[in-house]
Image (tube, rainbow, N blue to C red; front, side, top):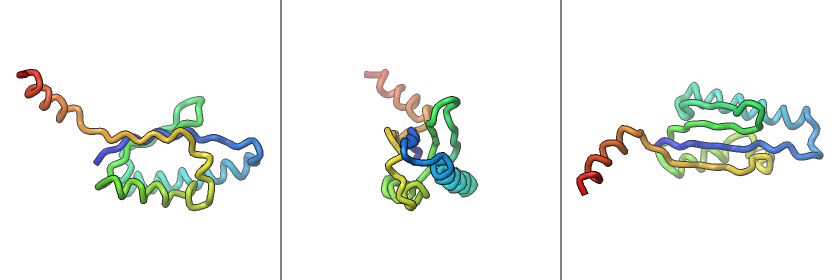
Length: 106
């Protein structure tokens, strides 16, 4: 199953830059390993904004939940910096185009 993941990373005012960016560095290393392993198909950071967007390919919703909770931000106790998490199940547009043929017939 494909999922679009969008996360706003919020730096708490009391957190020193070194600590905040060290956690984000660990998160980035884990994410790039997931890219190599095929669980993440693509990952981007929005330019000028602390937003990370990824396309994930996982077998089901349970594995998605488990994968998120194994990331360094969660394991190290920094899940509070991940704000406005959006997870959207997505499907190939080609499949939708095929469905449209049936739907257009009425």
